Length: 294
Image 1 (cartoon, rainbow, N blue to C red):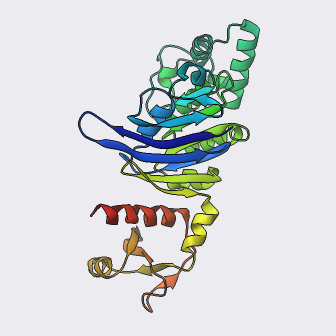
Image 2: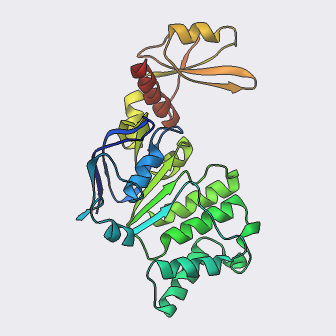
Image 3: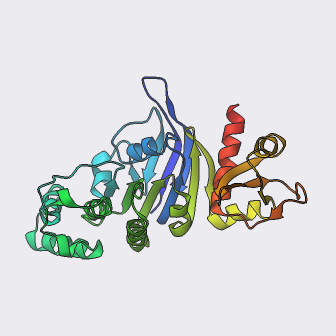
């Protein structure tokens, strides 16, 4: 069962064009949706989750028409939004019990068995009776995904799930996501390239409400192989390099700027060829987006 999106557009009353003709096919497994803040990712996720309507376009999940069969879609949907609230005085057990009933799990024995399994899966058994008001950000995110997985959904959407997490909690959460993506469509919406590189066999890049790239990471890397060049430079030389060459990224290493340049051959003797990363792919396509908007 795949998710098919065709020609989706959305313009808000203030004139912001959040989606501009998005067409995308998302297969079973982990799918990464990469883009900066304000790219339109959350608008697309909310639209898929039936929380808002597009101006034009269609969305189908298998045989379901998402835009006209909202109730049926919600029965098979698990959604972890970028921001969500939890009752601080309640425990994970009580919160999961509450949401399980809302999701239609009326058989008490089945409900409790599923809650027990999700607490184990999200490593929250030891704190299952503690108030969530004292939980860390990572613990709250793990409880959020447990809520999303109630009812064994076929489509799971997670929006910016690792933003703000420390490295330990981030890896724990990514490992958890990786466990659920085998026979379910899981959409990971994020601006963190490493999250997609670690988890997703398929991904897309969105910028300014438009789709910039979709495919598999290895295929994307192959298009840049032999065309990414690295040079350690100085702050004084950096503006001239940025004017003369297509610098796709700059970072400081031990206080000195290190640039990655897209060029079909060596731009000069000071440059060394490097194996491209998914970050290079991302910045390459984001640079294309910026150039087209000028």
